[in-house]
Image (cartoon, rainbow, N blue to C red; front, side):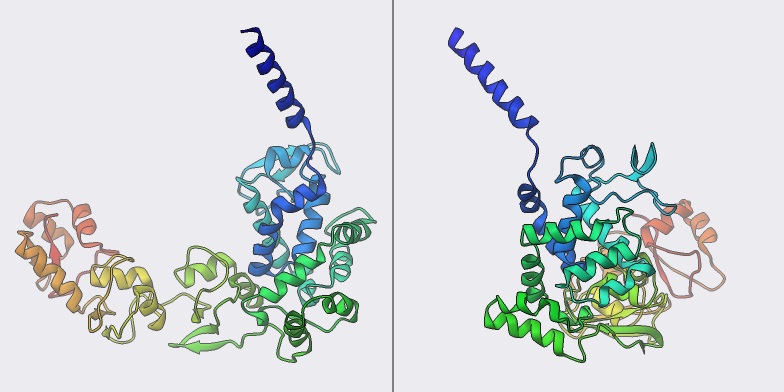
Length: 389
């Protein structure tokens, strides 16, 4: 028994010592390197700069602020911040800082913070491997008040060879055209240290006159739009065309930002509630989202017109309705299946509305809306309504 107590005592002592130990700079880099790389691919902020800033702002992950807020970059609340907050002494006592659910959210907000503010825009015309240009540019743009901020960043990057991470990531970028790269002699020696294949890729980006990220604005289906290849950053497009990222996602029925998985048209204004044509015939391996983008129709409208959910599988030859007044083959089949299963169906007659139909069948109007996935109370003659669930 005495031996067990002694063993437990020593184990607790070791844990206490371990918990009290500080994270080293290298441990911080190893822990957050992958997030910095992912953010470079998504938004274009060099991984070396992101990691060096994280090391500096968090005291290598040991600061009180990062421990209680997951805030790795000392970003203060600002007027537009609506998330959680913490108060911390910085330039003044009790200043408001952003609080994040995870480190990933902090890194992402840092990228968005730089990418979406006009006074940082010039940084993205620099070569991502030009860490000195980025360091001095951040100071010029007013990121930090410390007059030696650039020198501290540069020393951290050089001491821990962080620029190698940037250059290796640059060589892995799925779409090099998303960043504007200008020739910079200060990085040529670093690039030369890599394999011939990697060097050729990077030199091609630096030398190419078409490497500037500038997608021409066009019209598609009569709406302002841009055609983007796979690997293009949604945040970069939103920034280029001065559109809020949330609006760009909303216009294109997207939930998450990041890089495009496949080439597509992206709309720069809201899509139509009804298509220009009455119907669309499914051509092959298409999803509802593909068809909504192709026809500039809002995904919610397309699903409502056809009684479909976003994950429903379509078959080649299916006839989809692009207008509320047209019954598609898919919707018609769904109604027939419901009739065969004993579900009551009502076909709208002239001068009928939701109120009169609800009164006729003694059902709540709210249920009629829900059963038929109606987005408005407007009905068309001949429209078929489910009367009972």
